[in-house]
Length: 87
Image (cartoon, rainbow, N blue to C red):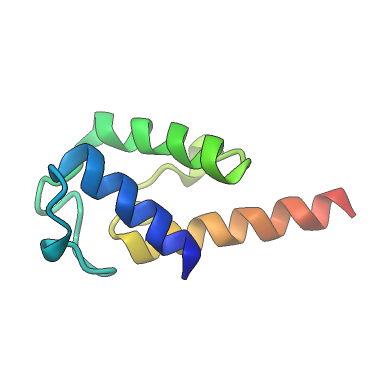
């Protein structure tokens, strides 16, 4: 859950003016215009810095960035892959 919390906090701070009440794990971020396509790339930069991962361009899709839950699942998967590659 820590991954979701960090992602939620960032989205709330940057795009929602601190209004965390309206952001649930499954809130559709792009459908509700909380984050636009430029915002996704800003978020990718945050994810790479915060979680020390590389987000391949093939993973920068609306499906992966649909909600905090889908972003978190992508991040957790990338972290697992990178741990496996390091072993």
